[in-house]
Structure formats: C-alpha cells, structure tokens
Image (cartoon, rainbow, N blue to C red; front, side, top):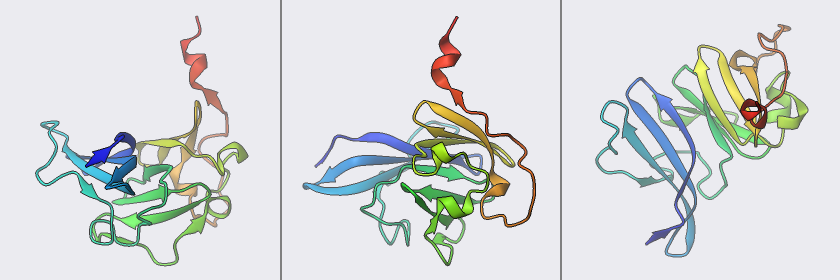
Length: 169
C-alpha cells in the first residue's frame, strides 16, 4: 500500500508525454520514488503506470535519494537535480551519461548563488530557456550554460524574481 503521494517533479517530453515523479512515497514502510506517464493528448495515465524508479525503469538514478527537481534540456535528456549535485539522463538510451553525478556549483555557469544548493523546481520553456526556482524566487536561465566551458555571455541576466510580487496590485 502506498501512502502520502504528492507530485514533486515533472517534465513534458516529445510532444506527447508528461512525466510526473512522486516523493515522500512509501511502499510497505519503505521509501520509494514513483513516476507516471500521462498522455498529453488524452490526459490519461498510460497503461502500466505508476512505476517505481529503479535500475530497470531509470538505470543509474539513485532510487532512494530525494530528487529536488527535474529539468528537461530540450535535447531528449533531463537533469535530475538533488541538493547540490545532478545527473544527466538520456531519455532515448534510457541511461545516465558517463561521469555523473556532478556538482551544480562547478557546472551551472553563471547560476546565482541563491540557487546553487536549493533548486526546488524548473520549467523548460524552449530551445535554451528555462525558469529555475528556489522556493518562491526564480530566474530565467540559459540551459546552454550547463557544462559549457566556453567563455560566453548568458542570454539572460541573473535577475531574481519573486512569485509573490506577481500578485501585488
């Protein structure tokens, strides 16, 4: 029996599937991470879901570690973000890229320090743009800056926005 199920992370992939991950989920008093796939056209859960994140469904993903968020990069890969580290997962090959996990501080170039250990959510917008959240604060972030060692200027500055400000009159 599963209890205390809450959607914690998700992403939209290949114009037909929405992936949702659940945290604080327990199966027979053992912590697990569940995920489900929803058809983006019918909004129905695909047959056979939800499933447990494990070495068969998501090889290389740390099964019992709390996932802070998942960032889709627009190129059939996702960044699974833990507190201060992340892994890059290939959705086509269904595996973690070599040499992961990596530290966010070393690889998310120009990311504001407020977000280095506290990325709580993300939204992929298009080709190279994402919103990265730290609780109610967020920034626009150029995805091309992740693991990019070239000396390039970010497309978006590090202006921090607050969701609360959006509701002021």
